[in-house]
Image 1 (cartoon, rainbow, N blue to C red):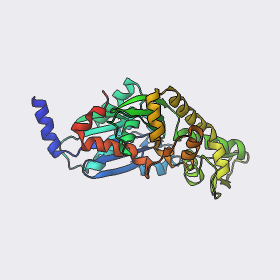
Image 2: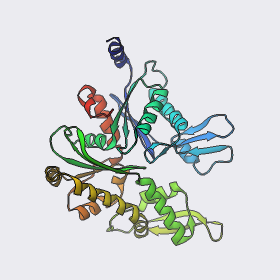
Image 3: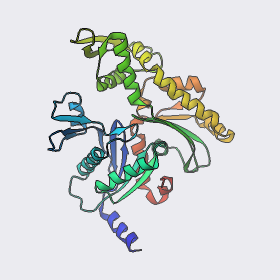
Image 4: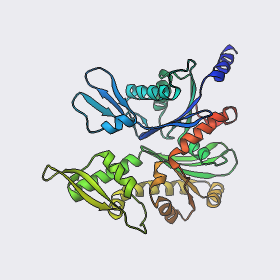
Length: 344
C-alpha cells in the first residue's frame, strides 16, 4: 500500500518516458511532449580508460573514422543488447539529455522490444534501464506498439497483421484482443540489407564500402519494386584491386538486385505467417489488409512487392520509423487502460 502511494507521488512530478531501443536508432517519447529524441544507437569510447567520447549522432559521425585510442560501438545487435555496459551508458545519456538533469524523481518507462528475444535478453533491457535511473520498467512487444502507433484498435476481437522491419529484426504479428494471436520474428532486417549492399559492391565492383555508406545508398536509391524514374547515386570506397580510394555511379536497378536476397527472406516469413493464421483471423486480415512499419516501410516499392506476393492490401503510415515509439507513448498516456498490452 505504501509502495503504491509513493509511486503515485512519483507520477505527479516525474516525466514518464517511452523508448524504442532500436538496433539502428533510439527514440524517446516524453509524456505530454511527444517524441523528443531520435538518435543513432552508437557510442564512441576511449581505449585508454578516460570514458565516453560521444553518443548518438556525434558518435555516428566518428564511426569508421577513429584512431587507435577511440572505438565506435553499436551496442545493440539484432534488436537486443550485445554490450550491456555500453548500452547502459547510452540509455543513461539519452535519458539525462531528455530530462535535462533537472528531474530529481525517477521516471517510469515503457520500452519496445522484439517479440523474439529471450527472458535473459528481456532482463538485460530491464536492468540497463533501472541502472540508468528509471523507477519502473514495462516492456511491450514491438509489433504491438507499432499497431497502436498506426491507430489499429488492438482491443477489438478482430485480426490485424503488422510487419515491423527494424534495424536488427523483422516482426510479423497478428493482433487481436490486446494480444499477439500469432507472431513470427527473424533476426534479419535493415542491417542485413545494408550488409547485402556492401557484399554486392565488393563482388560486382571490387569496391569496399562502409556499413553507413551502404545505408545511405539504400535510403537514396534503394527499392524493392521497379521504379518509374531511374535513380542514381555516387558510391565512394576503397578499390580492393588497386588499394586506392575510388567512386562510381550506381542506379536503383543494381541496388534492388543487391537487396533481393534479404527482402525475399522477409517476404517468405510473411507468407509463412499467413499460412499458419486461423481461418477467422485470415478473413479479418483479408478485409483489413497488412500494415508495414519500421525502417523497412521506407523502402520504395516494398508495399507493392508484398501486395503482389500476398494479394492483400498493404498500408504504410506517413512516418513508419516512428510507429513503435508513438505506440509506446500512447500506452504511457493511457497507462491504466493500456497496461494490459505490456508483457511480464
